[in-house]
Amino acid sequence: MANTFEVKNPATGEVLQTITRHSETEINDKLQAGYDAFHTWKKTNAHYRAKLLTKWSALIQDNKQSIAEVMTKENGKPLTESLGEVDYATSYIDWYAEEAKRIYGRTIPTHADGKRLLVTRHPIGLVAAITPWNFPAAMMTRKAAPALAAGCTFIAKPAEDTPLTTIRLIELAHEAGFPTDVVQHVNGRGSVVGKLFTSSSLVRKVTFTGSTPVGKQLIQQSANTVKNVTMELGGHAPLIIAEDADIDLAVEQTIASKFRNAGQTCICANRILVHSSIRDIFADKLTEKVKELKVGNGLEDNVQIGPVINKDGYTKIANQVDDAINKGATLLTGGTYDIDNEKETYFVHPTILNNVSDDMDIMHYETFGPVAPITTFTSLDEAIQVANDTPFGLAAYFFTNNYKIGTYLSENLDYGIIGWNDGATSAAHAPFGGMKESGLGREGGSEGIEPYLETKYISIGNFLE
Ligand code: NAP
Image 1 (spheres, rainbow, N blue to C red):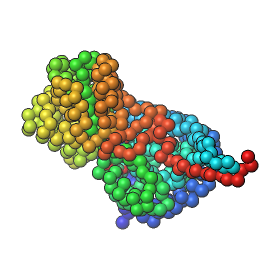
Image 2 (cartoon, helix red, strand yellow):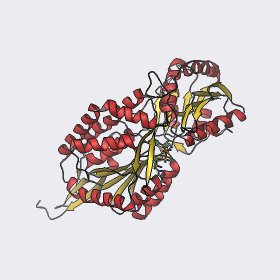
Image 3 (tube, rainbow, N blue to C red):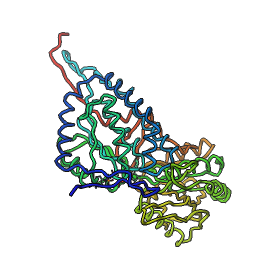
Image 4 (tube, rainbow, N blue to C red):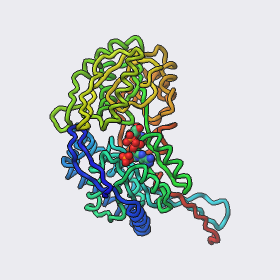
């Protein structure tokens, strides 16, 4: 019997495509092909690799509308967000097309006559990537672009909920001129493919974006072959609004951070900490704006909140909302759902919870849904203590126009990404990644190519002096 899975539209339940999983033998063959291809690909020059990346980016842009439609159909996010994600995805390719040309080595002043000391940089080898469903284009290009720019070969395993966008982007990479064995994808269950990727001695690097428990498992599995790993894992972002904050800006940016992709982003605000003196005015203004958000099929006009990805996602959200209400939180808006178990479609109406307290699950676990929990603080140190009281350290936000408060918060929040009066921080030219259990390594920026490079030190003796 064929080992297949269905890709469904989370807004309608329609089956978009049935995909056959690759067998273990096929996956191992692909790993061998990627490994073999590395020996010729690594010898290509940086400017040639940059040209191919630029061509790939242009082809994606030429097909932007159709790629965005596929993304909205398989992921559920509004079409405007999918179009934005295509731009975000190509911005990584464009950035690393340039960075390919800046992989510099160095010479070290020698300690002995007749010696020359050189440091050179080399691609690490075959890179295996596992990506999530919430950004099916950008999470792949943010790994593929620096890997290919560095001279590595690349193989991706997209999430089974959203493989179609990734498959299309890889087709376009081949159209741009990348040899088929240099950029590949596999279809398969995460648990199965993850074991093959991590146990293979042909793979030198595993790069993963997804949940923290799976990331921990992949780190353990990679230990046997001492693989280099990059881990972009879960978040639990605090968003702090200081007493002096511009409240309208804080409301606007809270919505941008919290409700994008129906709250299914790793960096979205998950705990809103408002100074007690401005809590009521902030909560009123936020509620008024959030009530205007339109929920529906992301392909329809003006929809801002699509469905959540699947039943597990919905159940987790609904349980956190119930838990908070049972423990005394006040519902300001939302808390309602349009669900169809037969079609497997799950829409969560944007929800605001007030009077949230530390004993509630929502204060401790990533929600991954359009729910904004509001709590208060009276001193900055109290806000920092609550914000840092989590094993996660991906993104944190705060709103203040006071430079002393802003600097103090920037310096004391244990997070890899800080948004100061800014709820939309991501950019290809800036390092993205988390502290603590939110991950290892950074993607984007000049930092983002480093994990794909090995350093070689060459000591040359017997020079004429
Ligand atoms: P997930 O369950 O960890 O899945 C992510 C990917 O891992 C999918 O491709 C999945 O494949 C695969 N997978 C599942 N179990 C696996 C296993 N045992 N071994 C190897 N691979 C496995 O995460 P998710 O729920 O899809 O994604 C949401 C999570 O990703 C959130 O925690 C979010 O914060 C995090 N995230 C982090 C970042 C970041 O940059 N830090 C960005 C986006 C998302 P299948 O689909 O085949 O199961």
